[in-house]
Amino acid sequence: MSERPHSRPSSTDRPDAAGVGAVSRPGSAILRGNVAVLALVSLLNDTASEMVYPLLPLFLVGTLRAGAGALGLIEGVADTTAAFVKLWSGVLSDRWRRRKGLVLWGYGLAALTRPLFALAQSAGQVLGLRFVDRVGKGVRGAPRDALLASSVPESQRGRAFG
Image (cartoon, helix red, strand yellow):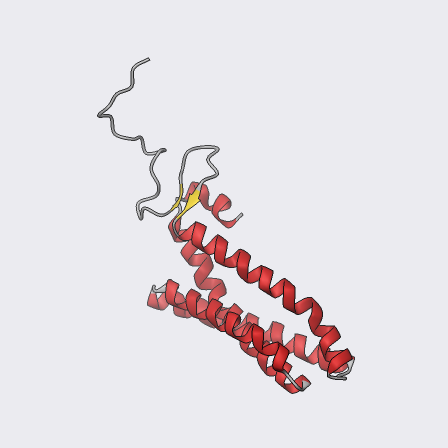
């Protein structure tokens, strides 16, 4: 068995043209570049969300003495905000072609609001914080997906998004 020391790697051994993303060997599970960073940030962000948001109804009803209607209003505003802002940020991302800034801004906005929930003294303050948090989610969603898609070869997109 002899190895060819000066042979060039085949196209299946190299990452995509941008030098980031997933290695395109069949069966390879190694992710790097934008894909690895976004996966880690997304994992940490989702972990932080799962630590805060399941307690929000108990906090609103038990501590702040808000009713079920306030909880419904807060969650309705939050979901609507995220949906509309995601539409806007997708258009902006496509026009600017600068996606990383929007992704960073969106994750940063959400991360800054989470600790403030502990300081909230009314359902209105929780509504405002939840609104700002969902603006962050909306801002980062579409640009993050476009960044992921452009960071890997088409044949590896399923793995990158998975």
